[in-house]
Amino acid sequence: MTPPLPAPAPARTPETDEFWAATSTGRLLLARCAQCTAVIWYPRALCPDCGSTSVTWIEASGLGTVYSFTVVHRGTGPYRDAAPYVVAYVELAEGPRVLTNLIGCAPDQVQIGQRVRVVFCDTGEGSSLYRFEPAEDPSQ
Amino acid sequence: MTIRGQAFIAGAYEHPRREIPDRSVAQIHGEVALGALADAGLGLADVDAYFCDSAAGFGPISMVEYLGLQPRYVDSTETGGSSYLVHVGHAAAAIATGRCQVALVTMAGLARSLPHPAARTSGSPEATFEAMWGMSVVAGYALAAQRHMFEFGTTSAQLAEVKVAASLHAQHNPHAVLRHPVTVDEVLASPLISSPLHRLDCCVVTDGGGAVVIVSPEVARDLDRTCVKVLGQAEAVKHTNNGRIDLTYTGAAATGPRAFAEAGVGPKDVDYVSIYDSFTITVVETLEDLGFCEKGAGGRFVLDGTLVAPHGKLPFNTDGGGLCNNHPSNRGGMTKVIEAVRQLRGEAHLAVQVPDCQVALAHGTGGSIATRMGSATLILGTEDT
Image (cartoon, rainbow over all chains, first blue to last red; front, side, top):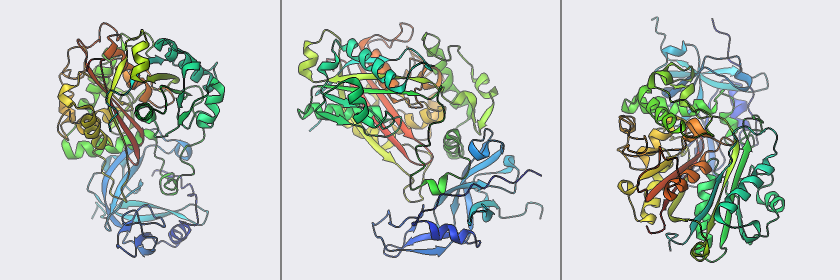
């Protein structure tokens, strides 16, 4: 059993406070443009597709697939002693490719295209990190 | 309007040291400034335009004072390691429009002796969503390598060929950090830092710096030194494009075609390339994006000594590059320009000098291939190109 990864708290701004507050209740929010309906990632108050500042929140399904990944063998900062661990881009079912960690499986078992689902890791500071784990239990 | 033929690189200087704990960053700027000006046959009093990145104190406000300059044109465009290729293009444009005649570009840093400056991105809007995952610089390029392998069948052994070529060149450079030629097997046997990238897929971390002097055609005519003509330049920022990041290409896909169009040449006309080589994958993707081979074919392209000077199909980074020679301040753009100038002057080491080198391309990268990156392509030629 590997120890849990560090969960450093994110810096919060007025633009992202609602996003991070939602993570502490187990919800992954996505910003969506009210004008062109684009899903916006990373979340911000301006739609980079059309320039609208009319942006609302929707709740993500929490499902996705692995777009790319790396097994980090030399951790840095809070992760100095955490290696090996997996940094990945997960393509959400809603479209955006988001940087994250994959947990809940051996690093050498990760594959591009693998289906994953969101899990939340409490930072202890009123927010949780959205990480992903395999969507299917390979033992079943 | 074009910058083609409107400006010349008259001076170039690379700091000879790779570990400089006894100097301040400003002091190294001063040494490389004097070195490049002396190479051109000019002095500080001749400089009427100054360029540096934002890491040099308070940019040009600090450095102009330190150097005792009185410029009428300054620029501190910050695009990471590609900044200096942007500066050369901006200097050429400023000269072409009559705003200045002698432009000095300097860069310096102590990445080896002072390895932990404040994170540059701590106040960036994206940091809130990217700073918590333990993603090192290497990990970002590893994400790109993994995806490139998945889509195109690129292998670690193919990436290693890039390092092998750089090491074959570095053995002739007395200033290079890593002077021993390595084999593909040695690259693959080096420790994984962030899969699939090994230690020897990564560039060196060095103190150091460099400078170039860009002058008007009128000034160039009066100098005794062989000058190098600026033929074309282009810059771009490639980013995550609202969640649609594609890790298989770089900003070179945008800058290459524009720089070639301005220069009036194509990939087949290029005799020598300086390709930003923070990591081996950086080189493979950039070569594809610049049109030296098809997208996805970069891994096969670098086989069979393609990149090895002097007789490979496309000799690259004949100083040993960032992979073996020097990557000062974690920014390899300046040294890319300097080695291209050496090649066009016929002043590279004899063992790696490309015969009859007429057209050279230098490409710089900054930021991260995994998220947002500054890219710049600079095409240079001999005086009669």
